[in-house]
Image 1: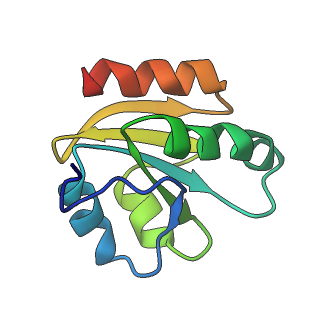
Image 2: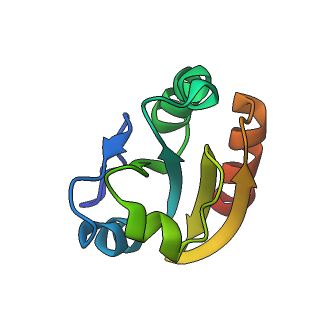
Amino acid sequence: MSSTNAVPTEPIQLAAPDEFDDYVADHDVVLVDFYADWCGPCQMMEPAVEAIANDTDAAVLKVDVDQHQALASEYGVQGIPTLLVFAGGELAERMVGAQTEAALTGAIEEHTA
């Protein structure tokens, strides 16, 4: 049986800044990946980010800092990649720099238990 807000199994690209809050509110746990196309560590993390979307109960939202500078500023993103974990609509965890898939999974599991 599936819920009305099925968790996407692949990362969702943020299109408009006003969708951010709705997305975070619509899912119990959301991993937000602030990244840029030119960022090497961001590219290296892409398989791990995709695995989180596919293998965990968290939704994954990708935010291009070049397109969404105001949003990045609002969340104090100074270095990328910056990954934020939202649980129940609230910011629960912040990780700066490249993370392993295990570290991301651990951060998600803390909030999906």
